[in-house]
Image 1: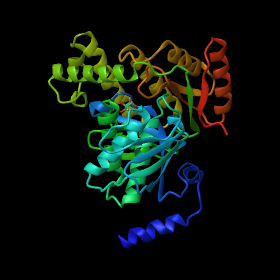
Image 2: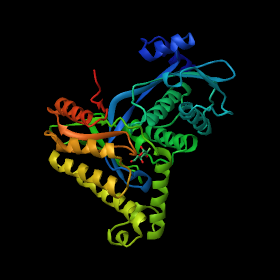
Image 3: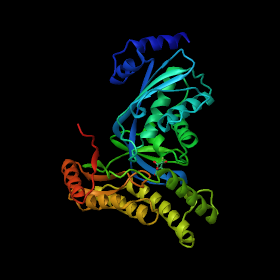
Image 4: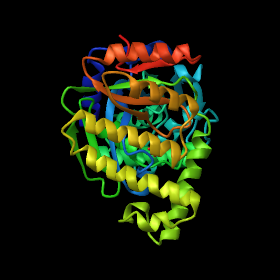
Length: 375
Ligand code: GAF
């Protein structure tokens, strides 16, 4: 306890970050702990994680920052630009604001993990674009849990943090997600991709193909159906696994039994099967063009077999794929709107972004550049 107090004191004497300065403006005192976590963009391996499959995300530069202190009050106070005002709650009454439910979920799960969680003042500042498929919610969960680990001296590692974040999403935000986003936010770096086996959680980092760089553009179309459509896809995969007599679609070793299924389970399972294979082939690619071809094939599979694309995503992906300097492009994240990711010649990134966004605008849509982040 004494060591913890000394540690907190030492922290209190550290230079102030913008997040802790904002905390001070809101709560009139300094935070006792601060942590951050990035969003992610998934290069390949979409809708495979809840089927025990492979994923290949990379962290993005944008971060979510969380600052906290013990409040000495009877309730929690949570402040974030996204909330508009300070939200108050106790651990026994769930806040009605959707954004607050992610933080609330983490607090509850930290308590279930054995931590004594006293009432806290919490400030959240996020640069991760929300609602576009770059895991703003996972960044919030991981940053919140990291901050709690630091403040309360919790003995949990980065994998456990990802698992608790996933539970916060499932139990408190109503999305039956896999573990891709939270593992990426907790463990991925921006300069190498993270190859993750979501069944065993074995992982290793792999370099991007030489001379290539990642570009992410927002289609400007808010994700619709993201929650209901997502949970429905998951249920369809579970049904396909049941029909095939396996615990998860990861266990299917050949395409033949999948091709014999009725229409919907066949197409859902075929996407998962071929997408897992694409991830494993991609990490063996030396040439960016081969990697890009796999991304193009992934988009076609997500559009035709998995049915999570939209006309705007298809248009933006098409414009990207036709642009010189682009090796491959696809929708990224859950789909139903949101962003596209492209693998580009690193020299060409600014020009590709400018030209594709102009063409997209010309067709009556308003997209925007998300990664690399505008200065
Ligand atoms: C969302 C989910 F949160 C992830 O778990 C993953 O399933 C992804 O959609 C699709 O690949 O981001």
